[in-house]
Amino acid sequence: MDEQILWSGKPFNYGLPSFTKYTISNTRIIIESGIVTKRRKEIRLYRIRDGSTKRNLWERILGIGDITVISTDADLPVFALRNIRKPVAVADILLNAADISRKTNRAYEMTEVHTDQ
Image (cartoon, rainbow, N blue to C red; front, side, top):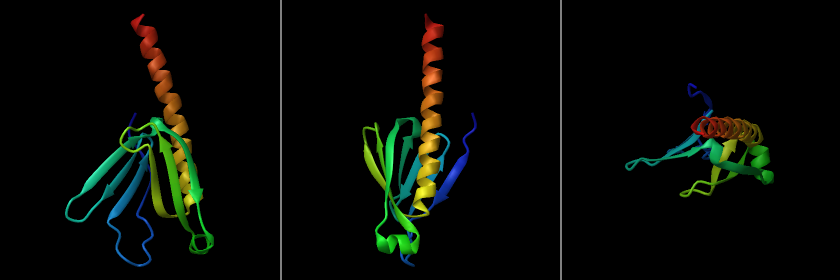
């Protein structure tokens, strides 16, 4: 299956430049950050177990919020996508893609086990 970008964006940084970029594809989340030293972290969507959004009054007025994700990833079991525009819509994209990825990977694993027997 070809990887497709479902959403990509940077945190809203109140007019200041942001050196963090989030990308959600149909197979993974990629978090890139840094100026001089670039860091890149990937989390496979099938590892995502749950997610939530948080928006205080000021953030609702600005149309931004945080998305917190709980995963089975050893390096990053809980992480947040901070100051995301339209956080509820982005969380829906992310969690729906994670559901599909879990079902796809589970089906693949079951097929693989069945073939080995």
